[in-house]
Length: 213
Image (cartoon, rainbow, N blue to C red):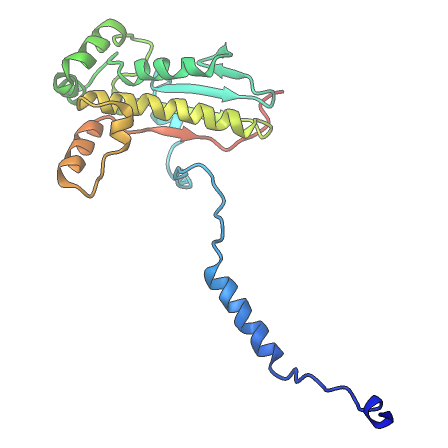
């Protein structure tokens, strides 16, 4: 019995532990889903060419719909304060569909619009102090570095919703249905192209800076 008590403990062979740990690491890397950061799905404009004149020189001021947001989440729209963000959508839609000084292409575009949009233009879209035509209309959004992400997204949502309503109505569908169009399907791609022809989604997002607060 004395000899049994003094027997040395059995050693565990740990020579392959590193290999096992490596295999487990590979397993978890392969099977684990890594969440992607969510953000705003929008392409930023390219870096301006220093040899090109600045946009304000090439574009008449009336063709730019200006939206400013400060660090207190206060909006200045077309130089007027605005508290209700939802008012942006109809204002932008009127701006896009304004034919204040249309070119030959602009007049052709007007004639191609469905009756509902032509009635909209005739009732709200002949202002001389607004955009010349949809092809020249630009929506400019500039935020402060302290502007909340929530307001930033809400403003962009309203801007894009205005364009989507115009596009959908142009081909006789809702804005939601327009967003669901499958561009891989030839018929739906043709509808998508027709909806946007002559009416570019011209949204200019300026680099944030300190503009008040």
